[in-house]
Image 1 (cartoon, rainbow, N blue to C red):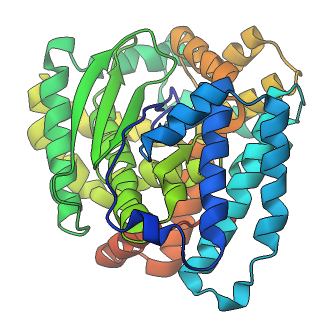
Image 2 (cartoon, one colour):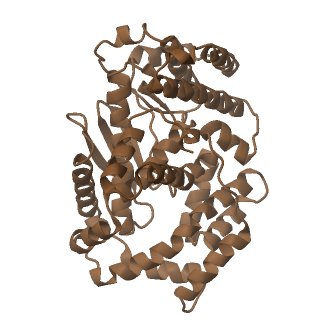
Image 3 (cartoon, rainbow, N blue to C red):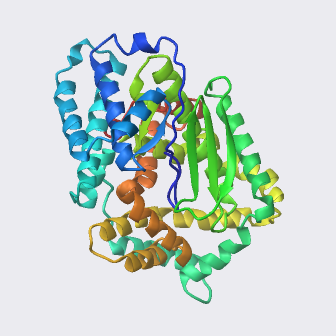
Length: 434
């Protein structure tokens, strides 16, 4: 998927590719290939009923056409999905190598997530934490209102002045909006720098590319539409002002080394090279999304050291945006103080989707504890309505990926790039990060 926390990115596209040795790869091996093919076809069938379920598809076009023409009833799809689980359980794991075992775990949990999503489409209600566990293989920590109130109190003292804290923060940040007529130049420069950093550490498929579009009237801030053949379309939502820090964030999250690189490497290494057909499809409501969003969110810290990012923004992006670079340190001082409030959105979503508070109360919570302006808070509530527990994939995903990389690579930049590259080239799942 792609960025959504304010949020967003999704896809529903079909592109037929020619895969060398595709037929051979999908009929031989460890017994998982026929199950993987069934998984893909059933996911496409589910996508006929749920327009958000298939985030991207670039496998055989006739499979998509067949799913659309047949339009299996939801109950039949669910029955067939449930039948995949004992078939997977019967696979002899002793005969698999490490990547084969990761693949088996991946398929098992992707199938279970599809089953849960189909049950939801059929009317079943899950509590927020149960839903996120089934769909995304993770449960976000719970924080009390007092936890966020203490953080807000600290920030209130650091940003003293007249008006409420959200009003003061909004007034402060308004000085750092990228003018609309400069947005593309700033964003393109950020993409170029992020790509150059990525290419120094991760070999990318020949011909990889992406284009940028600016859109409005969306419930997300940015979106990566992966088209297959190593190409993405990145959309940036301009409904609300775009602040200067978002240039690097979006470039790294949606592009390099985030979603675009993640999808291109999975297509190259797992679909084309190994013939693992399940990687011709990205199911949005699945554990894969937490890995995708977590690695994309951490991508900016992999691509740029803190000092390197500040120097790049001071010397390149802020002048391009026409902003006073003398204010850069002060701007990021305030940004660091607000970082701890990221999990406030999870609490708003948990309470709202569990029926404990109304949409208006959820927006008020986001205003008070995530310090969002009313328009942005309302946009995030619309996102919660549409994508529900998906919200955990950004902050919890980034935290789990960061802890995983630090445990394996420490603070060494080269080692961090190596572990990051391995992670986005393999079928690892959230529970496997711990």
